[in-house]
Length: 282
Image (tube, rainbow, N blue to C red; front, side, top):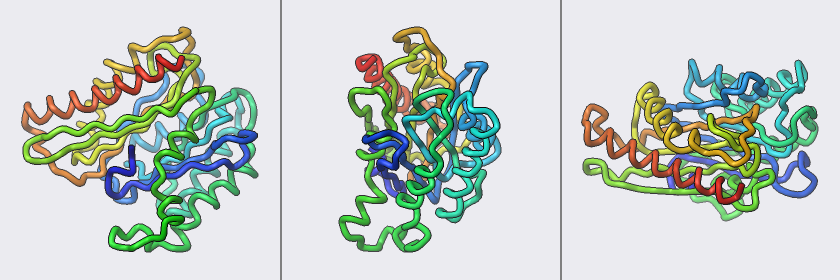
C-alpha cells in the first residue's frame, strides 16, 4: 500500500470518535507533484466534500485528514466550522497552507463531530512533524516506533472503515518506457452503495510524474469504469470522495500514446479491483 512509495507518510489511530476501533488517520505527501479528485453527485453534500473540492480546484493537496465513525453531514454551520478547524490544525502541524489540506469523513449522518477527541487525535498523529521535522529526511535513520507512527499504511486502511468487514487495499506495478510505475490505493464502503461513487472513500497514490489536468482525466476515466458501475443497495451518500496523488518520482512521456494507455490501464485496474472488494463486502 502507500508505504511502498517514497515520500508518503500515513498512520491511523483510535481517538474517541468511535468507541473502540481506529477512527482518525492522515495521508501526507510533502513533495506532492499533482492531485486529482472525484466527489459525490448527491445534491446534499457534507462539509468535508465542499472544503476538499474547493481546495483541489486551485491547489495540489499535500495531505488529507480522514475520520470515520461520523460523517459530519447535515450538521449545518457547526459542521463547516469543524472542517475549517480540522484543516487549520493539520496545516499548523505540517507547516503547509490550509488550502493544501483535504478533509474526508464517513460514518453517522446528522451528528456533530467530537472535536475534543479529534483535536487530541491530531496532536497524537501529527505533532511529530512539527517537533521533529527531520523525520521527513529520507536519509534519517528512525527507530521502529517513530517509523510505525508515520509510515503505517495498514493502520490507515483500518482507520477509514465503518461497517466494512475487511480492509481494502491494492498495489499494482507496470513498466512504462524504462520506468517501473506503481499505483497503490485503499478504499472503504460496504453499505449505501450506488453508482456515482457510492458511500465510499478512495485514496490512490502513484509515483508517475503526471500534470494535474492529465491526472484528473485519468482518474475520471478509471472511476467511470469502476466505482461508477458499482451498486449494492442503490443508496447514494453525502460524503463520497476519491483522491489521486502523484509523488512525481518517475517521469513518463505524457505525450506518448503507449505510455498514456499503459498508465490508464494500470489505474483503472487498481480501481476495478478496489470496487470489487467493496462489492464482495457489501
